Amino acid sequence: MAVDTDNSIYIKIQDWLAEYSHTHSTKKKKRLMNLIVVAMMPVVKKIAGSIARRAEDPVEDLVQAGSIGLVKAIERYNPELCPKFRIYAGYLIVGEMQHYMRDKVSLIKVPREIIELAMRIKNFVKDLDEDEMDQMTSEKVAQALDVPVQKVNTAIDVDRRKKVASLDELINVDGNKTSIGDLTPAFDYKEFSEQKDRQLEIDEIIKNLPPEYKEIVELFYYEDMKQTEIAEKLGMNQMMVSRRLKKAFNYMYKIIKKNDEE
Image (cartoon, rainbow, N blue to C red):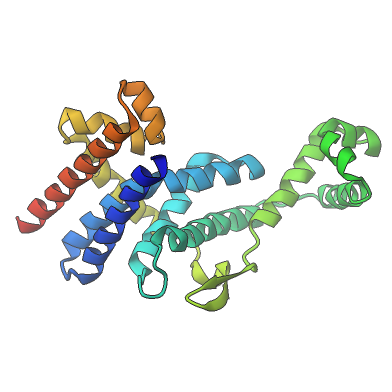
């Protein structure tokens, strides 16, 4: 049942994307984009959380970068070449986060001793078997190499950032092999500014929703709660949450259409 209710949201997103691609109204495009961003934000946050756990970067920064990737996916999406928007958007969301990571690494001057330590750690762990790797900790590495634990953690973090920020990995998009780097232009101030403006408009739409819709959208969008978690918090079943979310998105869409006519 969970899969069906979740899929209903993505089916709705595909409808909005179709309307986005066919409308010539700049105002309507902007509002449709905001609606899609709200519905897709849990995906962005999930990816950001996964990368942040590995790279120790603030989730908020990665969500912001990923949101820009999502917007680019909306603007470029072609359903004839990639039927599932969620998959296509995932590539650009990850890619934009990786650009952010790469640019951040390039701004940090890493001491030579940390770079050399990262290499020593690599050489040390490559000879370990699977069981030894499972039991390995930063403290044990520091003890084996006779260096402070803090330096070990710093060296590991620098190495992780470089791996996460690699833009050379080839992926299959539209039947062609391309790199994530080619798909995602670098983060810049203009995009940051537009993303902030978009966030303000989304906040305004949600703030003006009727109470029965407002709470459930806030939990879904701001709190990043799954439908099952929302159902438990509000004392209802998941089907009821799914229906109310769908009604909330339909209500938001009516606001978009009404504003577009004014």
